Amino acid sequence: MTRSRFGIIGAPVLFIGVFQLLEMMLSPALPLIQRELAASPGEIAWIFMGGLISSAISTPVVGRLADMYDKRTLLLTLMAVTSAGALVSGLAPNVLVLIAGQAVQGIWLGMLPLTVGLFRDTLDPERGATGNGLVIGVAALAGALGLILAGPLTSALGYRSLFFLALAGALVAALWAWRVVPATPRAASGRVDWAGGLLLGGGLALLMLGLTTSSNWGWTAPATIALFAAAVLTLGLWTIVELRTGDPLVDLRLLAGRSPAGVTAMGFVFGFASFGLVVALPLMLSLPAETGYGLGADTLWIGLYMFPLGIAGTLVAPLVGPMTRLLGRRAVLVLGSALVSAGTAVLAFWHSSPWQVVAGVTVMGLGGSIGLTSGLNVVAADVPADRAAGVSGVVFVAKSIGGTFGAQLGGMVLAAGTVAGVPAESSFVNTYLLSAVLGLLAVGAALVIPAAVRDAQGGHPVSAPATKPAALQGDTL
Image (cartoon, rainbow, N blue to C red):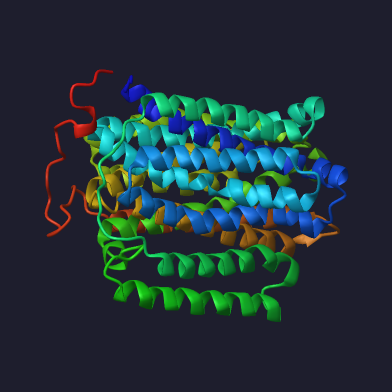
């Protein structure tokens, strides 16, 4: 079996890129799906909500499973289940089956922490850092491409083609992984904390459901408050169970360490701060030029304006390793966080011409990719091998929750400044400025993280391992 480092990185990165692309293409296709399946607005909302909840539940569970079992087997299993979800969605005769398919497909996000653990086990630290960078960069590029390709593909081939194209890409990635990804030794002993998984999954599901429905029900509606209260109680019970369990799903004591806590906080803040870009910018770009701040862009042009976000992230992510060796990892973490804040600040003060918008989007793309890649590298270096994938899963869940929370807050800020159905320029400026301020919180989180690699026991600086992982002894590029 050929086990090249290129293949070990390439197969999961291709899979992640395919499903990130599909996720971004679905949003512009929703009106077409609604018409063809005669779905109500509430049912359409559940297409995204089902996947969002399943990804929040499955990501930390997959991360822990990756810490305990052979990552090759788990990788292929995850690819198979996700592909089955895409097939069900593509063949769905009605919206309920489509929602079920999306819920199954939503577990693809568990691939992100799984790859962190896989790269740590099978690659040397330098190439593992490059792999983490490519995961973040390709995901950013796929997100930007999705906004551009959705319109032409659905117009020419229909919305079902999106699922079948993703399925084809997933099968190529699975075949590639089956040929090149080696088995990995079992890193952790013990059992899966299923009680902790059920409580964490239930708490996250209630929290995400409350966040996604608050825009329709209102933040102070009894149903919204009840969901949040139930989420707090469930997650509180989960915390008690995890602290008393000898082999917890998420080691909260480990998570409280400076490196895991700092990276998790950065993930949450990055997700939260991105709402200015995700919520406000497409709406502002679509407004008529006569408003003085809109650019009259259609769906295709909005995607083109957002495209530099993915290009910048893809180009800079593989350079994070060399930047870290040159500047030190804390400096790189601070740089990424500062650029996220600076990108939205640019949009707040300069957004009247296309080049200004492109400049702001590019700066934020650079910052997000640098910050997340360097954060994942910190987790891979500082967290014990039998917990690296699990902690990475928590980071991605925190980012997802932060983004969902931020999207709702962004909608509230825009709604507060809307006159005659059109948001005022000041409401967009306020949204961008709030994103910029939140981005500065990530700088504070980055400063908490130790400047040097820490060992798992005493927290003392150590040197990065220089030897090849056992899985690749004797392999060539």
